[in-house]
Length: 218
Image (cartoon, rainbow, N blue to C red; front, side, top):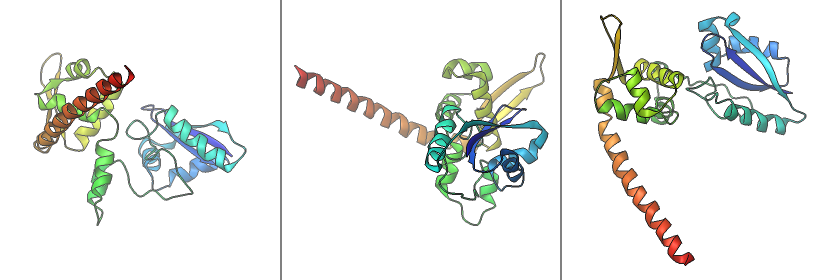
């Protein structure tokens, strides 16, 4: 029984899984699976992926615990990697992908699946907020948010694909690229405003609680 990692050699994204079988056999199963990692393998080609054992486990319970540990440690949960959840129980067949176009084709659209995919991670809201203030270049966003180049790049790519952000390349030398909100992206503004109102109220709550605690300690 092992915990294994599959790495996309093209973009560096990873998937962590567990198996009681040989990892080569598991990789072949992934190639035909109706899953996020399966979609990626078919898109980039199996030759562009590497599978390796990262830990051996003696019991099934330990295997489940360590799989969750490695998913968190290696940060392989979508959108940073190909894991859609922080660990699995049993052997579910994943039917939801990190591609909203696939949701649209389903008979029933679960709004929480859409939110989970679109707003996964801590950066999406910050990016949308900065762009709500006006169009920005990549480095301007990077500087304002204090985010790594690769993380910002992957998040912007997702937001462009999902129609929330527009990427415009200007025919200049050197080329100038700007990011701005689309019409549907701009419609998120009331949500951002509500978050700001709630955030200010929560800050007040935390300050009052802290002051109360200090008074009680005196």
